[in-house]
Image 1 (cartoon, rainbow, N blue to C red):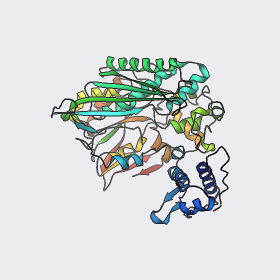
Image 2: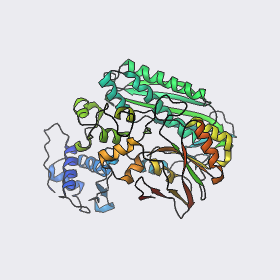
Image 3: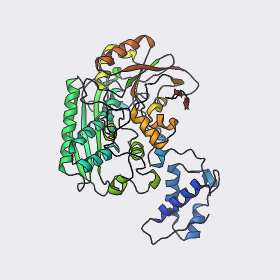
Length: 467
């Protein structure tokens, strides 16, 4: 394989290697299963450092186009790379799970979040739960809106996104007491001035006050704003939450056979929301942003994307933010920026009403509809009657031609919270959800199996299989 490398150009040599090998694979010049020259040989042939070649191979491996085969070196993979992965994002975070699976699983290994002994007060009957997450790349869409309109208030929704991604994970453990939050804002001060920080801080306070009005005791413990222009061209919004609870209240996610799977809709307008929710949440926004929005944004706001990503995957959609979203009252921008719904008020009431009858709670965030595979044991999750597909997800799939299998692995596709209960309790769940104007639906059941697996009937009636 001959590479045409130009050390004097502004494109780093490792990136030239990545681009040329990836192009050769896309065009068929390198066939699936074909062996690549070794790192040592490429290094010697082109007079470059072995580390440079290794870095390029790692990038190609992450993109999913080549794979290491022990001592045989690297081979071209068969074409099954997801668009999500090609943009530098992992839907199922396989490499993260591979690392953390080696660590102590905590006091309740099957719980949705890691549960530890009560290190804060030393009470043997209690435990601590701590969780960190954020709004992800949804903050970049808010940035685009801000640059286009000058309206910094859009970041109030981003503050909510960051909190909800922590709060709703904690609720899946059975959290029923006080939760203390700390926020971290990493910004490029040249692009995100004080009014952006103000909107983020006050947006956090307003959302927490709304939750407290509905019985969810969450409070601010302060935070940090860091000016890190070398790390980000825009803004990153993260949160950390910590709580103490009784061990006896922890939901162990002991998901077995013969349970009903009830989904809580991600769309509509809950009683504690002020605007219609598109259902988008805060997962999959890297793909949603690039697949929906047009290349005009790449040309005007190069600070909003990674230059290492294939150019045909950068802002390759048909829309501007102000364009109408088909079959919806929302614009494309409103749908993409729709603040992530918290189900905390609903879950809190369910815990009070059903207690230990709730066998599992799963927040369909990273991994989306396949998230359930991480919980329970020897369970076959059968999701055969999902909610109708919300317009935002239909538009993303149409614009990108992403496979339906990948869509259900990246996006919630209509429900973002699942409750696992014996069939006799489904009506109670429906009634409580309805009291908050949130639609609930029995979307499936669990059966026994040799290993965890998921059978999902998609919006076209086709069955998708995951394991």
